[in-house]
Image (cartoon, rainbow, N blue to C red; front, side, top):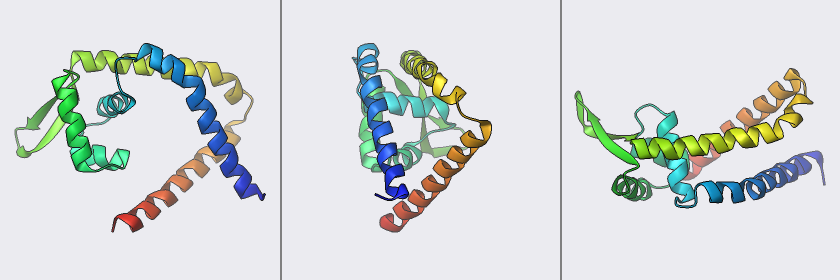
Amino acid sequence: MNEEEQVMVEFRNLFNKLAWLNKPKMEECLKDYKPSEVHCIEYIAKNTDPNVTKLAESFYVTKSAVSKLMKKLIEKGFIESYQKSNNKKEVYFRLTSEGKKINQIHEKLHKEFQERDQSVFEQITKEQLHMMLAFAKNYNQHLDMEIKKIKR
């Protein structure tokens, strides 16, 4: 196996182990919510004027799938829709107080996981961290280009 293949294997292992370690705590604290709901709530909390198009692009799903999820989240009282006075065509979403509570629980869990793993980051230099971040960004940009080719 060459080094590039080893990198990909290590990334897959890393992702799988994180998912395995984090899943029980996530399920315990967010047992009444589906992962897609929680991640959608997180996206709405972190982004300005989220709409169906932005959500679909972010999650690599169809606008129809996002619309169905938004309808469920509205029915459950986690989000509400709104329009801007200067654009009555576009519909945006924001969290309700209940949605904000779910997001706070989710953020708290991520902070716990980050604190659990902090010892790893304390062992690397800023330069190493910047190199890893640059690699991740570069790889993400490459994958974005590949996705665009498929969506044409």
